[in-house]
Length: 155
Image (cartoon, rainbow, N blue to C red; front, side, top):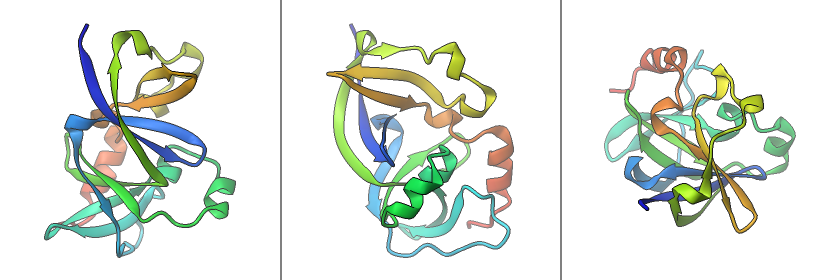
């Protein structure tokens, strides 16, 4: 049975994972420059190895309760991913660990929670009682969001 590696991370009280092969880097974010009239899920832009890339709030993108947002310190950790469109940094609360997942650990998202707005959920991993939402990097940005991001001037 084939396995693949993911990096797990936490946003609020929820645990997520991304395919390690789609991750460029895990970085500390020193400065985020705000962009006027940016989409609500975009925190701004940052310098990443001499290239300007957009920074997405994981809390806002995945619609984690704003109550959680106000109770926690602002994150300074980001996962830089390679989407179909461009490199994007996602702010997370904590990067946890690298895990090996196999098909036996994964379940399709239940139909009751599947919708157009969360097509980026590729599977749910159940590991030792931990429910981890596995994200599809290529679907994290909807077509509309990709267009909105492309309007942000990033070099």
